[in-house]
Image 1 (tube, one colour):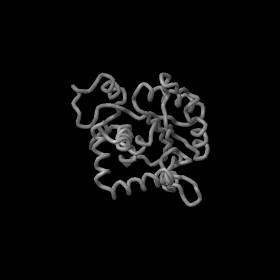
Image 2 (cartoon, rainbow, N blue to C red):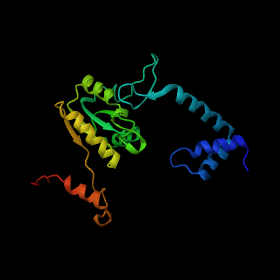
Image 3 (cartoon, one colour):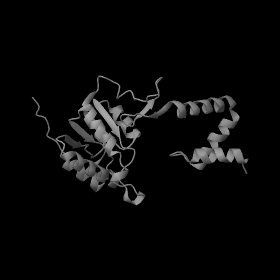
Image 4 (cartoon, rainbow, N blue to C red):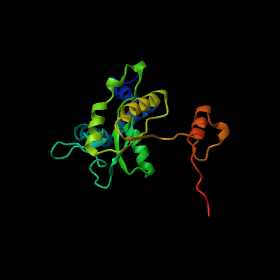
Length: 205
């Protein structure tokens, strides 16, 4: 029922995470009805592809500077403690941790996790780039912040083994019951991790 050019745009929107066919169709029809928005979006997407790429030091998103280099604001911030490195799977995970405001170190984005079903083995992980980051920044502690999934745990286990012989402290983010959550609704794995990851209660008075 839709003209071919419009149908192609709908299909492209539908490829975005969390966007279904109906939502994609609404997006496309809105752009058709708002020519200025469509033109502005087109320009910004072109600029995005041209001027933003992965940070050459950590894999975070970075704007290309006048020299053609791409270094993110976290890597270029002298106030960051380069001795503390947080390893994440995706840029989205980095952004989520940054929102907490508790990470004073820097990051390394893997971009993928171990996944035998998808053909991703140890050789597909950016371990040489991680090794270069560790040496360049003089890292003393690595926080493994991969997701608590089968692939995330396997990746953390591999990285832990790789880093064990370097004399670097390796820690794993804790997982447990969300703040404000009821124990009766927590799954067994989450509740078990909450018990295993318990910590001492500071004495009062």
